Amino acid sequence: MKKALMILFAFAASSACASAPTPLPEPGSAGAGVYASRCGVCHSVPHPKRHTYEQWKHMVRVMDKAREHKDMDPLTDEERGSILEYLKKHSR
Image (cartoon, rainbow, N blue to C red; front, top):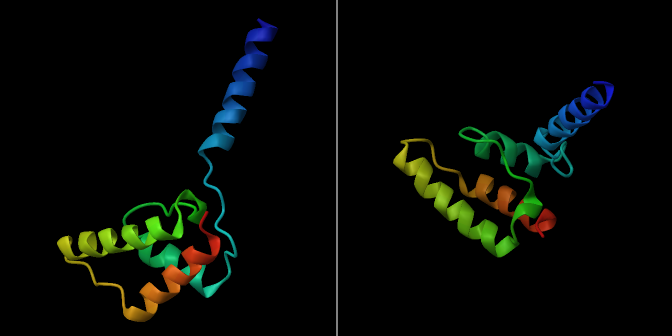
């Protein structure tokens, strides 16, 4: 019984750690702020290392179209530039 409880505890502890999002790099930076606030409106923001910069450029275009489809305000050129600069700096 004691062994079963230890295994259950270990599983619960590891599950909690696995589900916690990885903090964004430079969380206090302007780029991280724009990325989190504008891209996090509909979904949690993925860590920049999830994609290469080329993949991120594609994803931003895809999300621009999704925002348009949902009648959401589009990213301004300044916001898009800030997001892409942040993602380029921190992508894989």
